[in-house]
Length: 303
Length: 139
Image (tube, rainbow over all chains, first blue to last red; front, side, top):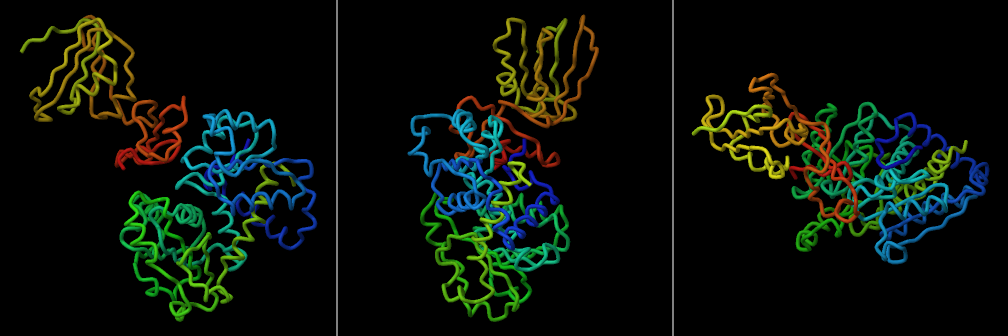
């Protein structure tokens, strides 16, 4: 049985197939509206993430399926002390596929070992969030028309930002990718990820100036500095507004730059950028539903 | 200093000085009722100082645990007072219930009955990562 715990669980071919199906869904959504009739998706959110949960639920409902689940641990049997393994054992009997979010890293993997139905990791702490990466790949493919020959700027929290680590791992599998890593010194890409870049032979530059290489970028991926990743509030307050992207900072950017953000944003992109055609982040959120539709079909073996 | 030679058992040699007690505990040698000699800070031409453990019984030794603690240890197998084999140990690919994940956000910190599993991801730098959350043991 196939699970999606880490983006590396899927081959490039599998990912390309999902993107192809998602693009077909965008073109002809009506053809897909009964693909999952009679199927049930369980969304088990052991920590709240309204956006991701609604995206999964919208995806399943648009396929004609049904959804059940909980949106936080306090409204589930976990609050009574039930283990992840037991919860999954039970819910496997109630549903055909499970999307699971959990604050503890590795929890979806534990679930996948015990589950009788496919598990989709909908985010585990600061670890993996593969459907965000799939969303990002569909966005790049849809906006740029390709997944190779790209210079990608990653900006903000590159230390704790799991979306950034997953996106790097995913993009390394495509040809002629260059990375510009933009972060304050305290939030630089961790050493082990630098080693991943170096062993792959990919070109990369580190800088703390968002404007320095702006003119070279095809993609600018902004991230939020997340409060929950810090143990020390002072550090968070000092770093949270380090980068604020506005139209002025984009003056040297390419005309076809694609600005992405996994959302929610706080201050890191000024609202004056929203109306610029290069701002792709709201379209990106919508693409998330289409790629999740393609993924749910794939996990259920629906053609 | 004289220590009885062993009849059937093991000599764990070339242990990094100071590591013998850790091995003694990890291999549960305190539970044996045979003779066990623990020698620390012995002189060594190769290492300067080293530790040695002699076990006077052919017990099952977890070589993965030993390899994880110190891959340079040699294991001499003695039968009828003769050295019959020098086992070479290596860094194990996977260790189970030897070390505990220090990441407070790891599922192993809350879920009961989970084995603590670490996988060797970088042999050159001896980096082991948690099987669940991928946190390095050295972080």
